[in-house]
Image (cartoon, rainbow, N blue to C red; front, side):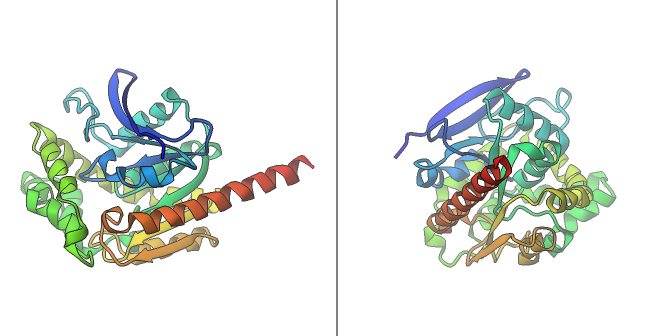
Length: 298
């Protein structure tokens, strides 16, 4: 088993924290977390893959151990999160890599893929949505906030940052709550309780509308470039529904779609099964790409 290292790097004046494991010359996999978590969500997946892959998992700006610059110094939009992580990949020397995208990590990763399709070797989407049919009614209060970002509507979505909501996100839809470690949601709640973090997250919830508006762009990328795609989906996710996973096949007919009997944070209960699916999928994608290169060269 390869050791996991914990590093920080300066990205144009911002400190970005990341976890890294695996041989530097192995196929690379960039792991992008979601709300309200951090790269900590990958703590048990990384050791299951590091013998075969080079894994790098950063904390997004405003999350985890990365810098959370003041809102008058950094505008918290998904475009800007993608800018920082895009530049991060260059600073740490990733030139070609697969992406694992979850929740907020999906619109960040998909933006990077649209900008640099030649760099993306494959996509693993774990409850990382790109289709309107994947959005549940749980988004209705947030939709109201998008349509009218009044003080009242901003206050109404503050409930998504409540400690009990975080626990519910981890435990809703899981087959047995005893398999969900409390460490994950306790750490997330500690990060959410930092001064100023609540306003940062409310800004990002408002800007999530830009992701839905960008869905046609992401879908055009899928159709045009046909990246190998694996969807590993907690079927009981209260926010991102199974039709969102199935919709990938509309644009990538060969997409591999797998559902697991769990909720939003599928790695908490099904890390071994998801790791096995990733190994099988990425090994096949690597072989296919090698075959295409050999065929093209001949």
